[in-house]
Length: 398
Image 1 (cartoon, rainbow, N blue to C red):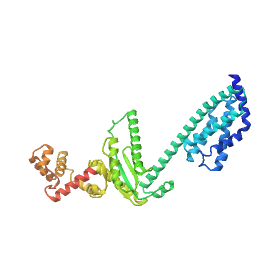
Image 2: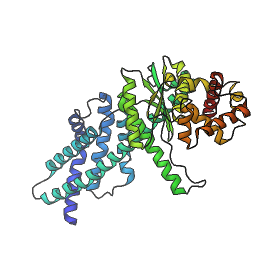
Image 3: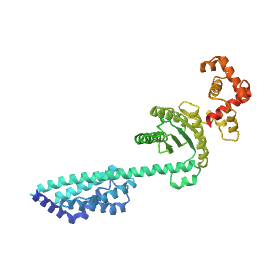
């Protein structure tokens, strides 16, 4: 074997003076795979990489031991190719072309009687190509992942700025912003409450589920739009800015149904419209309140706009009268509040209310009288019904 290796080193030494010529041939044959790169880059940078690869292999054939430093140029060049948009298959094809040209050069430099050494060089080439291919692939995927993460964070930053009312800051990140937008607020199923002091394993599991949910929601919106959608999400929901498109309402209804099926609970989407970047902030606030009301009032999975929850939205609007309204019900205990709520839900039918609560109809009369005595509001009058209904709504949604 020592003699075979010595002969292989001699063959490699014969090829070394041809390194520049081999590099030029490699670059010429790689043209199709790397055709989108600028000519000066192919002729200079790619040629330098080819020369490094050629000299490295010939050094290995002469006994050099491969080190991490030997592979660093390949890693650096791979990161550049990712940034330039070169596909992994094209990059690997280029390296395989290089190794084929080196092999043809080795064959041409082999003299009769040196066939055993050539077989050794073939095995060395395959082993080295495996190492180089693995290194390139790992570097490519790592760089691609880093760029994708950076892009996602940029999109989140832009969305955060738009929702905060700073469109000028959002525009500085080079993201294409194309209003009008459907501003969607997402309310996801609530996760089971954890203990007051959850274990590290429980907390870790919840974090994993939250990230998985966010990725699932993001994929659904991206598929709906046909491109990455501006979102700001957490494990409970968040916002998405969906470019206006035909039949978006129906598509969002289907999206909500798919999310319900995958998450195992009701999903409410609040929908508002933003004609300009400057109106995204108020639209996001409105959509979030609509979705919250849909959740608090236990509406089923679906898409809800302002008109769908208009009365509750109006009554729950912050104002100086809200505290006064809820104060009207302060004297009532839970039993009277429950009775009052059921009475309104049963369209003021005392018998239905009694049946729902499992009591006699006269008991309902007595409780409503008690409500009147404690609050001064007679729910048997139109004014009293409106006032109690408003107070209950504000109390529930505040």
